[in-house]
Amino acid sequence: MREKAMIRDGSPCDTSFYPGGPMTVKAAKAAGQTLCPRIDQCRQDHRGGRSIQCLMKLGVEVARACLEGGHGIEEEMEAFRRDMSQIPTQEFVWSPDGTKLDILTDREDAFAKVGQFATMVMAV
Image (cartoon, rainbow, N blue to C red; front, side, top):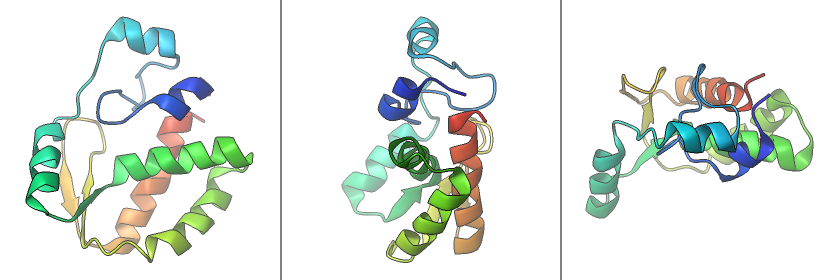
């Protein structure tokens, strides 16, 4: 399992949570930042008012909730499903590997990707 401090404090914007990525804060610092290839576009979208949701950020939030609540990913994903219905976004950004980026519009597919990324973050 990935170090709790890394899950709690890390961001998919500048840290690789993908398989093969650092498992500890010390290893992440030694490796240096791994910027998401979409980081500049996300900043432009935010400034321009475009409503697009990052599924990697949501996956980290689910992993953090697992740590805080002592629950497994499946249980947290049930709670997240209820929360996701409140997200007005119609577009979701997803990267299966930290390099290739996709824009998804199907909410069920997006929901599944959040769980997939939470599993990567936890490294379980």
